[in-house]
Image 1 (cartoon, rainbow over the protein chains, first blue to last red):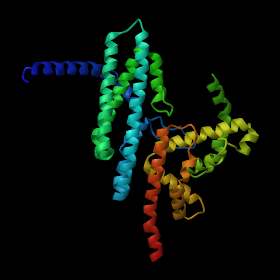
Image 2: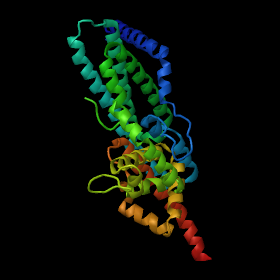
Image 3: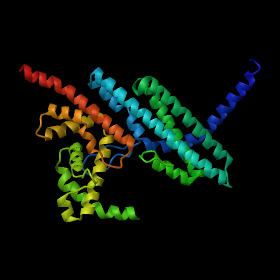
Image 4: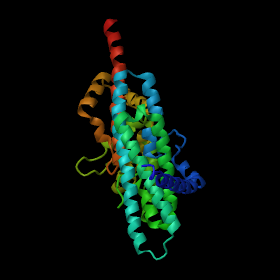
Length: 193
Length: 152
């Protein structure tokens, strides 16, 4: 058992280095995550709908703050049930669409003669981390609901948004056609294939 | 190009609809119900005689559909508290008793017919869930009020 420790240590070190490498591109492109921040609510008949991510709306704190402040425990339980269903649906859809785009990219990359290995590895890692995070959040929400775990879920949601932004940036470099599919797919009903 | 042309075509009809009709309705929920009521359930086409007279039937239908989607999106993204206010404002604009409307909406799920076609599935889910919550909250608020009325 102790003979394995150096290999486990090396493996962990390798993963940490790779994680930092992916994170580097996330930090330098942090501005992308600003797209997920809600716009100011305007009033009037002709005002446009605020351009927000549905995830931001589902995981946002304002509804729970209102429900916990102004309603009975029965309503609070109902809210938790409803939001658990929506949160899981959003996470599964986001995961599925990212996977669809990644699969399309893999097919395109196989035929490419101008493959940028470093960017491809970063892309694969950001995708892998994104999947792990999504599965972790799905498990957590399924077990305890989005309200009880709201702090960690909100943090996880922002990490997932950041990873998705990194993934989009890297995809824009290596495969602009599939990057456009990501743009269309995340907030609309039609799944991109 | 075709999208741009379509946008330019129906823009005067959309502005007309907003200024002459929608602005007179009390809140977005009332607008949503009104716009849904101009849709033929069999064909999904929208009809509005006044608008069709000034523009054309096709442009009127396009403008109604566009405003319907726009208002639905706004309601999807508004907070639960705002949605309750919208719903309350709509119910008070009808001549029916609040508890009757709440009961019937809850049982029949009438709000489902207010959803535009070709909407994001998850947005529809969020809207339906929030309306259900809003109805339940309004009902709990309604109970003490009606109990007070009875005791008086």
